[in-house]
Structure formats: structure tokens, C-alpha cells
Image (tube, rainbow, N blue to C red; front, side):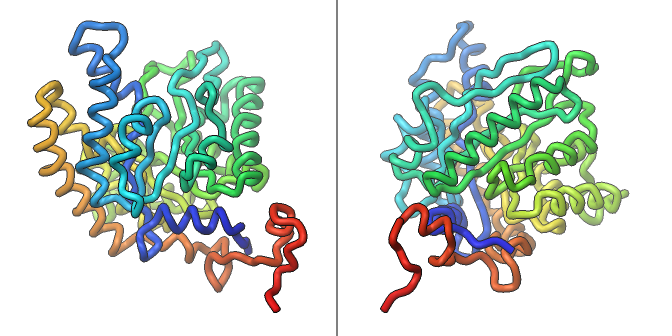
Length: 352
């Protein structure tokens, strides 16, 4: 049974809707947005104004259906922070989109000149970090990735802010399908996804909420009630059991129909919502650089899709604060907890 510090409890409440369900929109993508824009212009690097402008448009058009939005410090925060409603939760990403590829696996890093402390100081409600992970990568690589995540988790505890952790498996050099894109790995193994969740569910990583990928390829997820759905459901159930705390689904570039099917499995397994981007906005983005068409697509199909998956979330997702890890009384703050007395020395935990 776990209690939450005051800051973590407040941040988690800010990220969710009033019923405790996460309906969070990702605006922090960098390569998936920069790449198509750069390709359109025939440039090595996408123009800043186009990337930042698209992110600002995402905030304008999609925040109404979101409980929280995930922004990156390079583009979305500078251009969009003034557009984000203070009624919405604010999550800021800390990992750099550039990773180091080695023969033994991928190495992650924080964005230069940003930290958990800086994210806390700007008033964000949570820190999000993505780490690439393969249980069968080189021992030195996995040790590096584990230390990277532990360092973030310790800082989130020190600055009393929720740690939202995203996991993605990726191709090693020997795999048939190679990509450096931020997309679901073709041919991924469910065992790799599950073993990764089991590793980072250990308490020394300090994860408060998991952002998880489907344990089966999106195209193979039949949705609850579809042909052979019980096998896929068993994998989602095991993933939820291993997570052992609130968790949400990521879309990893899945299409609208595929992601909705994934959510039906996830919610049956105890997920508390989603944190998704491309499943919501990629169809509209495909009309770049027609900004009128992009806005129309977001305000039309994008918003309609969010309303659809939000209705599914309302009906089937588990409120985060009711998760079994918090015990029968649900998530709560204990002012007598040692961690609170550490942050606020001299606080006795009682009021006379």
C-alpha cells in the first residue's frame, strides 16, 4: 500500500479529469513532426516556425478535449505555453529526441540545460521521460538506461513532482526490421515489452505513472470481442499486473481504428486512460503545408476522434486514484509521512 506526497498527489490530480481518468494529448513529438516538414521543403532541418506553429495549433484545437497536454521545451513550451488553459494539466518532456545508437543498443539523454528542477520551477504538473529499452541489449547499455531512469526518478522525488515514464522497445542490430523512427517496432516480441515493464516497476525507479506501448503489434490487436481477442487480452492483463501502479497507453503512430482497439484491451486490463498524439492528429498533419486544411482536420476529425475515445475512457477506464497499489482507501496524502517531514522540516503532521 502506497501513500503519495503532497506534490505528487496534486500533480496527478491535475493531469486527470474530475473523475480521475487521464485524457492526455502529446504535443512533444520532434522527429515525427520535424521529419515530414523537412522532407516537404527538401531541407536537412525543418524550419522552426513551421514546427512550433503546428504545435501551437495542436494546443489551440485539442486542449478542449484533453485533461492534460504534454509539451516539449524546444518548440511547444516557447510557442504554446501562453495558449494552454490553466485549467489543463501541464506535462513537460525531459528526454532529448536525439539518442546515441551503439552496436549494443540505444543510449538516452536529457535535453541540454533542462532538468526536473527547472520543470518544477516553471509550474509543470509532471515530468515525462521516454527511455528506449530492450532486455536483451548489451549489459552496459541496459545499465546506462537503468541509471538514467533512476536519476530522473530520484530528482522527481526530491522536487516532489510526478514521474510519468514511457517505455519503447526498439530494433537491435541483429533484428530484421530496422528503424530509428519513433514508431512501433515491426516484429516486436511481447516478452520484450513485458520484461521491460517488470524491470522499471521496481520501486527504486520511482515511476508514478507508466506510459506503455501495446504488447502486440497494433495491427494484430483485435479489440475486445474480435477474433482471438482473448490471447491479446492475456498479454495486456499481464502488462497491467506487472506495472503495479496507474498506467496509460501510448499510440506509437498507430492509426485511429487500431489505437481504439488497443484501448479496449488496455481498459479491460485496468489502464486509467491514454497519452497519445499521432493517432489523434496525424491525418490532419498529412495535409501540410495547407494550414487551413490542418486546422479543419484537427477541429473536425481530430476532435471527433478524441470525443469517441474519451467516451470509451469514461465508460471503461479505471480511475487512477482507485488503483490497487494505494490500498482500499485509494490514493491519499499522509502529512505524517517521513518524506513530507523531510521536505518540510519541523512539520509535526498534526494541527492543534
